Length: 142
Image 1: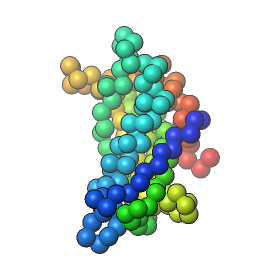
Image 2 (image 1 turned 120 degrees about the vertical axis):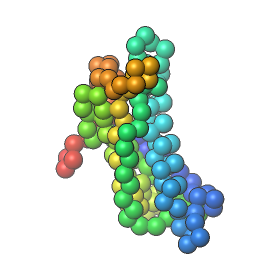
Image 3 (image 1 turned 90 degrees about the vertical axis):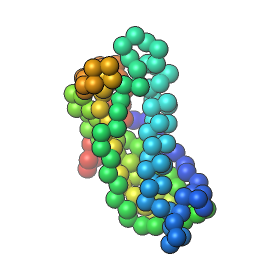
């Protein structure tokens, strides 16, 4: 498994009236982590090859559990792994921690579906992409 961790600096504009990171800001951090996952693990190998495009994945579901607070000026780490690979979809697990204390801030999941936009239908994940996803598969409890 490759390391899929990014750092995020919390800007003041990402906080709310209570002074902590606004719940919606975490979804931006998670999106950045997924984008970097795709860019680092898949884009260079597949984009431009016939029948293989990372643009054929669509976000179907996302969930975020808030554990503790973070504040402007904090540096957070977002760790991203793949927890499930199905026929047409796969699921990311995200864990956000404080960079300095390693304290968990957020646990989140996001399910991506392989999608054919011209037909507006889900489609099987191409085998070559599935193979790369399996390199980052982490089973719960392992």
